[in-house]
Length: 285
Image (tube, rainbow, N blue to C red; front, top):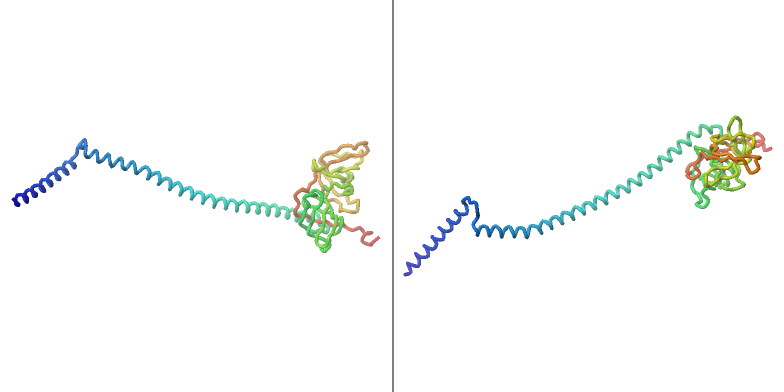
């Protein structure tokens, strides 16, 4: 009896091996259709892949997008910093270029002022409430600056020295609206026509020349210079061009409007011009 059970177990083992080999052979051969157990296993595996793969892809894409966003943020931050640096450099470069051009123009202007004693100066202060009236330069009594000396830029005259300190001076601009601020000028034509700058039209940004004789022919485009007749400024300092002429209230004189050659609003570097002393002044008479 025991021998029978031993043979029975051996028979079952061999039968199982034979069935397993048969199944393997069956699954390996080429078929048009899968068996339902194979199809079930395949469908189950595919469904499991679909269930777990999509969330995995979503998470992976989310992480990748966050990484790209952080990288883009850092790149934008760096680019913004560089852009700010570039803007500052450009502003500085533009300012230096403007200042160099202005200084070059002043140096070229020296050729026209060879017969005068001149002093280069820089604007160091300007009152916001009196922007069109006065400014302060970095030259004073120590440097030989005196009251009523003419002040010009490379483009034209802007005013005169109003008061002098030891190392600074105050400049009164031609655009100062002050009845006592008068400048004797010559309008250049076939002959010089004289008048007085006695005001400034703030709206038009033009100087006003009054007391021009009614019989004199003054036209738009004529040049206006200092006359040198009032013993205050040197003769020939350029001021600007005539823009408009009209008779006064009684028709006895004319009033002319002059567009200044110099820009009164934006002033950084100027030249102070000394007037030539006459023989009587030098002798003290």
